[in-house]
Length: 318
Ligand SMILES: [Zn+2]
Image 1: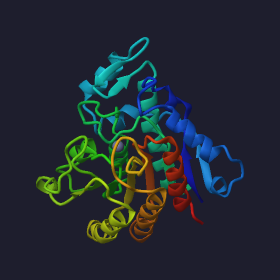
Image 2: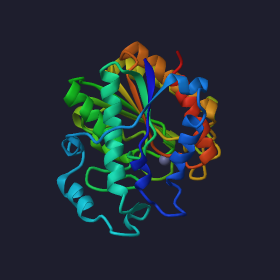
Image 3: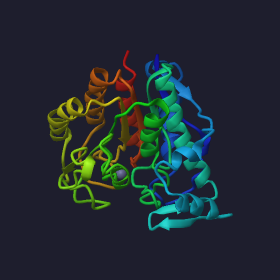
């Protein structure tokens, strides 16, 4: 059994323009560093998967996104160039195709973890998803890949409880909102605060039945590996023990890296490896090791490649 590495050429079809940080180069660099070295010890532990489009794709996307938003995306595809869905979110002729394959990729990863083909998986996808709201695109994100996957796990596999860990440096407002009053999906986010998008204070902890299953861990600028790991070690074991998840999804942004140009945390690739280690051991204790990790942010190309490599080497350790 191996760790899946989900990759697809359609992910590159989302053309954000030359100066946009969320560029196709992010994935080219990952593929080059991770797949470019034949017979590296890491590559021998990975199963490279090119997903197919999910046959009921919009049935699953509709679990999170409302029909008028989905229709607007289908109707707005530009013939050339790009339009902007919000100030930061370009939309090009190939963007919908990429977003559809991103969701399909995560669902494929879930399927292969569930049928025992994989131990766990990392989806090297774009566009990212955690800022996407049920009714709109936001912050480089079109469909909320991880949120759709959470509902897929619950409805297709009848696993009642999904734990989402979002360590992207930005708060995942879209994911939080999707499950804010829902006690069956735990949303835990560590993020720089205050920072884009402005949400994610400790006071935001869920509503109604969902009170207590949203947990925000806001971090001051300059937070380093030791400080973040201390918080993870203090908070995660209790949250897992109380919630008893059946499946873990990681919104794996790597923009908390010290070299990242979009934020000001001081996490290193070793820090990401340690965070992965904590989550992996909790997954083994609570949910048979079931983890699907999805790329969110991470905009310094070299730091991204090194961090993903470390993340994968922990996920795939024999
Ligand atoms: Zn981010």
